[in-house]
Image 1 (tube, one colour):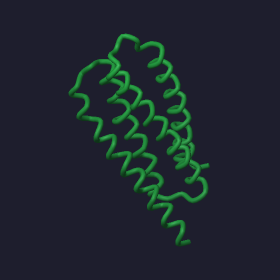
Image 2: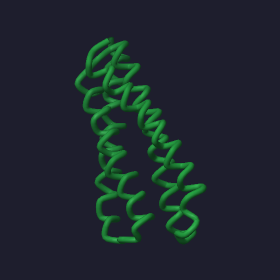
Image 3: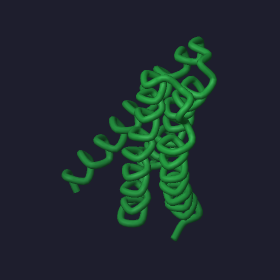
Image 4: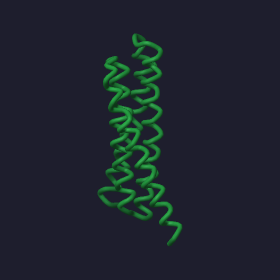
Length: 127
């Protein structure tokens, strides 16, 4: 197991754990925020979970057939989780609307990560 693969799988596991914790906090500890902000928070949780699973898949693929595309895909998924989900968490809790400016950068990171994952998978089919 390479260091990078071990790192990706460990971060995916920690991300899944924190998504559960943040989801529980949102369900039980955020009774004071508006329903609209609670939906923003839930969107952050959903995307963190989706990309936790994507990160797990990339980590497993790194074991089978490592590539630069997979390394970058993993990095972009992690960056996306911090920027996209993180900005939504802080926005929902703080109400500071300007933080919404950060969210699209996380979305772009997610899109690029999926694109690199697709590139890796396409190259596999040519082997």
